[in-house]
Length: 280
Length: 286
Picture 1 (cartoon, rainbow over the protein chains, first blue to last red):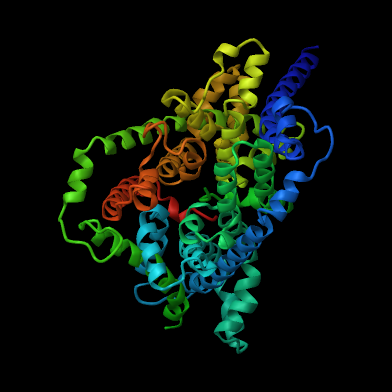
Picture 2: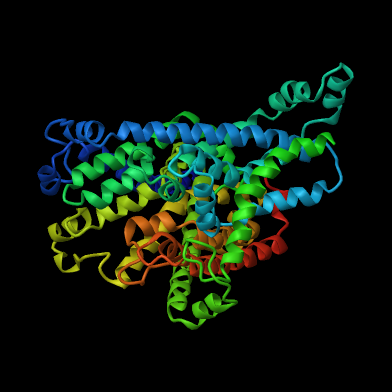
């Protein structure tokens, strides 16, 4: 009898916990749903019934965003910047982390600390001088300026995570490969890359997300309309089209979709990445 | 030698694109640089101007007010972690959903709040429909309600992050500790406050420091999307002011560089505190 009461109590408690978590989950999913339903409305319909499903699936907002506003160009710019900066960051970070983790040299500890410490310099602190540096190099309004800026800001965090990860690779494996005649690049390719694939993957995903979600750097360095990224384009939609909230919501939806897609594909990796810490 | 060559490319990029601008900014903070030419050396004038003016203290006050979201975030986030820890039906799904606001761009999240709390937006409509129309207002029109919404937004978007960290911390605690407390008859809140929170000391410490640094460096997109620092300067933070003084209508680059150096010192102080409190850098990534 007592046992029975206990399990009943436990079940009630579990049901209560489930309900609380479900309410919270709704609060996080509702904004996505809200964007999805209102992006298909006219501004009049949005004003009248913002909580209802659209009366019909109008694509006007999307047509305007793609046709007039050229939002696909912004996607393309964002993709080039994100892929370019991720490729550059990962390449530089793999070699550097291999050095920091496995190749002793004089002053290694100091150089490591100096590089990793730059992660605590906020982007805002170096932005003005960076802007003048980039315009001196005549690369403002060129995507490469933002690629370089992102590479520099994401390198220290990536090096920190990868160096820690690479330290776990056994020295015997590297020695064995060296005895077999493998040179520097062969060791990186045949030992470091396969053994460090998990930490490298986490860095690729997070650097890609942070590059495509950022506003500040491209807003400053890329001011030409045909160079703007999706977040810069969104800020233009939000500041200039406040009379048409349904159009703005369609813009918000399009800006949120790429990151949501990446999250849906890789959420296992991402959840793991957060539990190892240091990402915010 | 191989080691040096291995780290050299990364080192050059970091030196050129972070180090050089930092040194350049530090030098320019002692000048009346206008963005054109070199500017004249004016010593500490920018710094003196900043700390003796009233503006800086308003910004600092705003940053300090925003810090108050951190205890709320930690309390709610760890509570959610404890609920997830029960592993009820669907907990893995919930864990994934709770992290959504961290994945979507902060700019989009900020604008969503702008849309929901706009004058003819959904929140005011609900209030009018349920007979609470007297509560409807221009939410971002007064300093108090604008700040309240910013704080609410920051707590809400960080619940998932905090809960994940909490789960990580809980995983390191032996389940027998919680079982023993339950057998002793300790109620839920009793267990939460006298066992769970103390057990998660390191997690809380880490969250605090990361969040404090984040308040000084990471909330630009939220402010930019929601209030643009207004009304007046009532929700302008230090980093937002650096942006205004660098690229806004009242551009004063020399002054902005000095403000940036002050921000850097604040962030460095908190970082050093972090390193002292816990030698976290060595634990990361394991």
